[in-house]
Length: 194
Image 1 (spheres, one colour):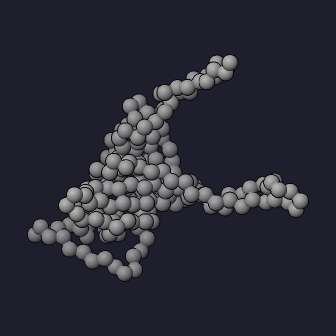
Image 2 (tube, one colour):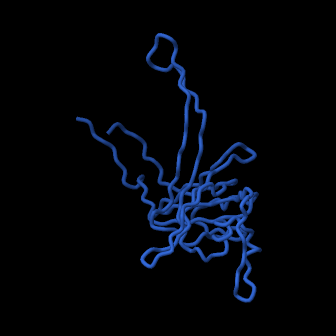
Image 3 (tube, rainbow, N blue to C red):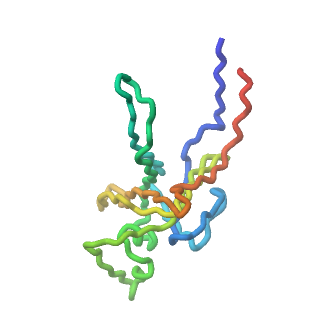
């Protein structure tokens, strides 16, 4: 009889987590269990939808004449994204990201913050740090060059929390990498055939 090997401590539920941002060139906080310090700025409360790690890939198959199966496949597109909805829409860092406005331009004067949205926005790349926590398991995702590539509509309504729903696209850094992982997961036990 086949004996199936299972290990509950190797599973992961995104029980908690957070997100931070900093200027391009800011190094990774490194450890998902250590609180990021300035220049990292928090994104605040994230909706209970959590963090969605996206994989978007395309490939080209090469099938020779007379065959019905390809003999080779080449990856032609490999994109990594992170989707979140941030709820602290009054947080200066969050507003800066949503409207592509430098944080310094959002300093209130006499309690009033004023800014204008341009019809021709410029790229707004920043570094991002996302953490997923589940007991002893923690996952860290460092995006050295990320940008909010998609923003959803914002609903202002009595029975709904206003939030900024973003897709952050990870672009290659100088080393050609898009996402760096720093994970604390239990060791996988040796397979003994049982």
